[in-house]
Image 1 (cartoon, rainbow, N blue to C red):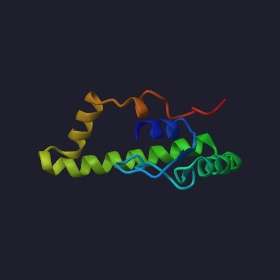
Image 2: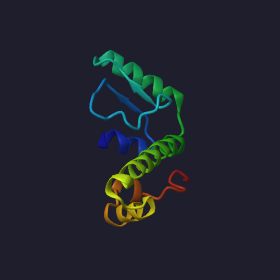
Image 3: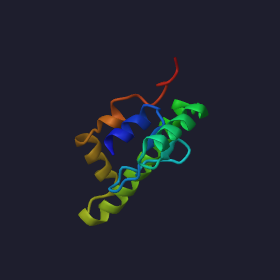
Length: 113
């Protein structure tokens, strides 16, 4: 899951083969193709995405929206379980668990060159 999410946050479309276990959590059919596990199918999916010329900024922003929504749901679900307010829980995670995929890269102007 980490590698595919890194690619999406870098603005790169993804071609993958069918998977289980969460690798597809932040996938979007607009810029991710799931190909059969054979070289011709993978090559065809890569060619299709290359021809579409999808904006890297669009891929990144749409992925960030999915990540933000998943983070919000996580905090909303966890708050009543641990008995800590949603706000305090969010602050706790922000201070202690700074994730490199999302926070080390600036969100604004990444593709303005």
